[in-house]
Image 1: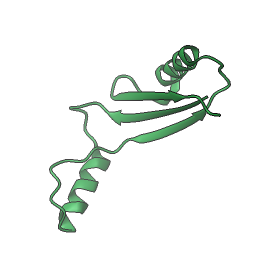
Image 2: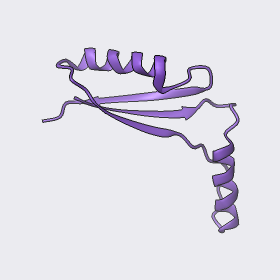
Image 3: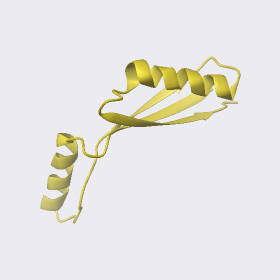
Length: 81
């Protein structure tokens, strides 16, 4: 199984990287009202069932991959053939 986790700062949390991207894009002539910078984590899992794989990745996010106080995350799990 393959899982993709997208981690972003929660709304209302300061995002200095996002602000720098927005400012730089504006200076280049691109009118951008806002930008948020996050990260993508791709995982190869040794799970056999979709539900158990998703639960495992959920625990990974809660314990290591995201800071639940300031970040939100989205999980996508797919079977690899």
